[in-house]
Length: 172
Image 1 (spheres, rainbow, N blue to C red):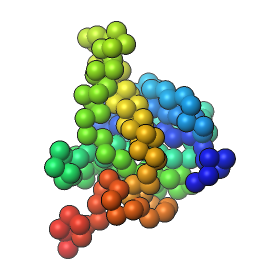
Image 2 (tube, rainbow, N blue to C red):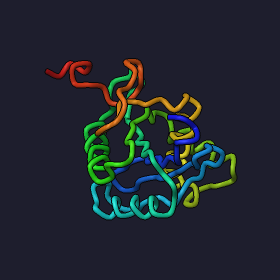
Image 3 (cartoon, rainbow, N blue to C red):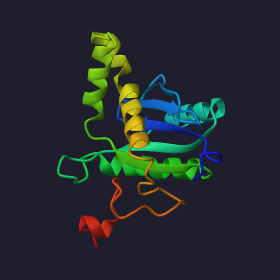
């Protein structure tokens, strides 16, 4: 996508109790953690919260953290996150929905929060959105790969991280 045609990105660190949100502008200059969504990851209220952010900001891409193990296999929450990403694609069909490897984002976010002077309850309240910020930053630094899109969109390169086709995971 040409820089003049692109818009902002909303990153989501999907969780069962909270979902972290972070965004960047079209020029990729500012990266901002937003208030996390407090509530179940399968809640209709989460989709309403995403919609509210989309109404406030010029976004064309939803970037979802994909749970990977250190050996590159899918993490235990991969099925839940894949279902969430598919629901995002169905709810917001004009947006690209991409997945990107989220491993170690929470650890990196915790370190950044400590460096910024956030401790205890304050750090825990910010952790999910700062994890989404780390995810977003990693994706941008990786050259904005079009990891396997969920729903319509360009095909990924075979070496892109993110959810693998069933055949690559050994599923018939």
